[in-house]
Length: 108
Image (cartoon, rainbow, N blue to C red):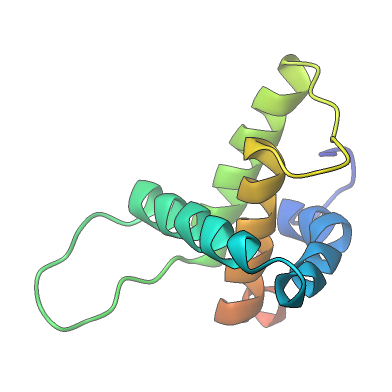
């Protein structure tokens, strides 16, 4: 999953972005992905006081994906037919990439 050069977000998005189309058929999936996206944001962005929204940057999310996919590789994870923790987490990363427009940024 991490073998291609460049940003790891590109690989994850190409693999898991199609799962976002399942949102209209599986309402529970929306809630699960939302919870995973919030957990990723919580892990990457410390709690802030004040009105500014917390945002995740491309570099931080890419580092997270590298660590997460390395862990999956070490665990010999195989993508299941349905949704497990890992597929939900990677789908949430795709949702964040799409919502924050992180693939159009000039950074790797």
